[in-house]
Length: 183
Image 1: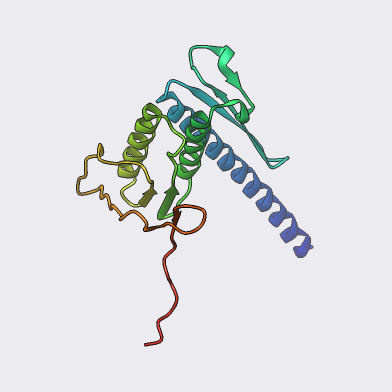
Image 2: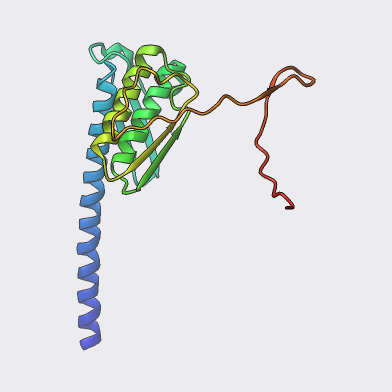
C-alpha cells in the first residue's frame, strides 16, 4: 500500500513538473516571437514564428513591409538575399536572447546585406551585446567597420588581409601554416 501511495505521489509530481515545463516552454516561445518581430520592426518589416513542438518544426512568416499585408510570405526562399540574411540574423538574435551561453560568435553575418540593412544589423548587434554585459560577443566580418565608434565595452580588432598568391588559376587565398615546428 505504501508503494502504491509513493507511485501515485510520484506520478502527480511528474504531471506537475510537465505542466510547469510546458508553461515555461510557452513563455520562451512567446518571448522569442516578440524579440524576432521587434528586430524585424527596426527595418520596417514584421514577422512571426510558428513553433510546433509535436512535429519538431519552426516556421517563419515575414512581412517585408509591416504596413502592407500583401508583402507577407511564409516561403523564406521568396526573400532577397539581404532580406533572408536579416531575417536569419533576427531569428538567431531572438533565439540567442533565451540562451544562457557566455559567448556568441557570428561569422560573416552581413555579407549579403545592403548598406541600410547592414547599418541596422550592426547597430542592433552592438546594442544587444552592450545590453548583455555578462556575455561576450564576437562578430567576424570582412566588411568595413570604420563607422562604429569604440568605447570601453566595444573593441574592434582589424586583421591584416590574407596574403594572395598568383598560382595557376589566378589569385587565391592562402591558409595559415599550423604545423608543429621540429625545433
